[in-house]
Amino acid sequence: MARILLIEPPVPENPSKVMRIIGSIGSLKAAVKYPPHDLTVLGGFLRKNGIEDFEIIDALNLNYSWKRLKYEISKENPEAVVFTCTIPTLDNDTKVAEIAKEVNPEIKTIMINFLMETCRYNILERYKDVDFACIRDYEIPVLNLIKNNYDGRKVKGIYYRDNGRVVRNAGCEYCWNLDELGIPAHDKLPLRIYEDHIIKRKPMALVLCSRGCVNQCHHCTSIGLNPLRTRSVESVIEELRFLESLGVKEITFWDCELPFERNNTKQAWIKKFLRRIKEEKFDFTMSCNVRSDCINYEILKLMKSVGFHTLKLGADSCFQHILDNMNKNETVEEIERAAREIKELGFKLLTYCTLGHRGETAETMRATIKWVTHKLKPDFTTFSIAVPVKGTVFYNYLKEYGYLNEDAEGDPNAPPTYDYLGRVEKEGLPDLTSKEMYKIAMWGYRYFYLRPSYIVRRLLTTNNLLFDVKNGLYFILRYVFEPLKRVV
Image (cartoon, rainbow, N blue to C red; front, top):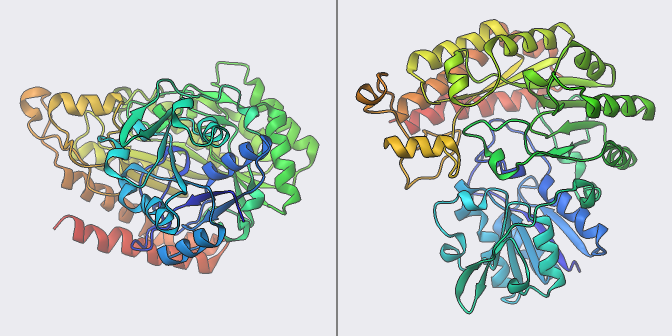
């Protein structure tokens, strides 16, 4: 029996998978399955500190019902369950604590999320079956809870209960040296079930070389991850060797950006890392997120030479004033240059766009969608709506101007919890409603993906026809029929 169970909650009442990795928000945009990386990191940290009797249950991607998950908890009867969550899905995710207490009221229930304090209410006060909630970096508080027999008074960086009263312990237990976390426990996962529409091979695993971001866009959830911290090159190489021994073929780097050194620096980390990958002669195909000010032709050529095949570029807007308003610290010209060089060198390109920033209008949103489609010409794209995360500059701006509905939690794939009504007097811009933003974003997906030329090209270049057909059906449900229900 496992002493500790690390659980990724299922969503049996919702056909959409949930993104809970590194403080992510809301549901996924495609029928993909990503490993619960937060739990593998925690498992590796426990293992490094002498706690071997733990298991990871990926109830989300194994499509467990609550009944099945309760059976698994009963079978193990652990002393503690640790589970991930997102703020918009708390009602669902906290059922893990509820059923754990039904199995055995003595089981300790611990919730982890980098954005715990962005919630507009006290989570422990609302969800009575949750014993502990970790603030930001969760690994050290979880370990200290286990070592101190779940005495919350002795552990920094948590919310806990003391005689029925919810207490927040002062301070956070940041992990300043990421190498101290050890090697994530990938071996505890059913690696062969994970898949993505851009991968070339299976099994697939997620790897992080850093925590935090080189930038801080005004809306971004990296507020819960910053400041930027990086692992040593040798630590990541050791993890890649471990994954190679497990038979993994595809690596998805989940860093906010890789490289995470700007072009005006020596970029020593990424150059050493790419050189070490070549020296080890790893047989991986790889993808990662990039920023235009952190990649150049030299770096791109090196990445291509060691097996990177797809790069995911933040684009966001074709209007410089909107990029400036969101503190993007990139120019439209830099983004266009990066997209062009990525395509020239034979990479697949995925672009991210977050719409609805300060200064946005219906016209700027539509223009950005057309710019992405016809100028950047990515192979894949997203058109999310910026989510106002409590504690960010964007959230404070919306609240100050009275645009924000403070009684709702945001999901980037739903009508936003704000609108821009009444701006004529305040900022001289046309009104823009929540439903209008949502309708334009959903139109953007249809405009890009339902082009006959795109569909034909995708079918001719697919790596997995069955998976792409499944994603096509998911797309129709998600971006054709679901919007009709949401905006009525």
